[in-house]
Image (cartoon, rainbow, N blue to C red):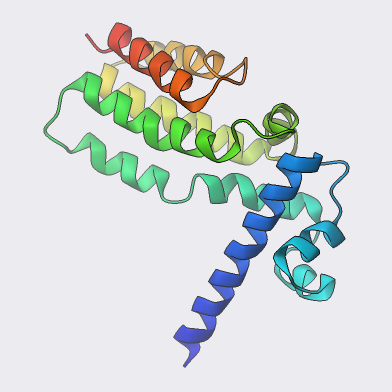
Length: 178
């Protein structure tokens, strides 16, 4: 019986995170209220506050939600019998391109992108460490992995369409993993 309850809780939490992501991308962080998110998620404000203590907590949850399962999938890619270039590209697809596709092209994408580093420093640092760790395992040294990460970050600076970002990442991985 408790398994069903926790599944319901998880489903409800996902609904809330989807609603919050929608609101933040449509209206921006500062103009989105907990009321807006509750309305979008079709639930009461008190129920929303049972799941998330405040808007900052909810935003932090979104960052982790957009990357959910990505690190574990990327870890499995490292064990696959494919070329270094293919591994690096697949990991970038999992950790950068797929999450990017969820936020790209919305009215407040630029603001959302900036707000992530301000409001989710622990998550963004974990993200950076993970990419560098994966790249180091593929490229063989930490300095190359750090440069790869910095270059990777620059590829989305002009908020490109997902297809454009994918082409850029493919070119970058081609240059790094020869």
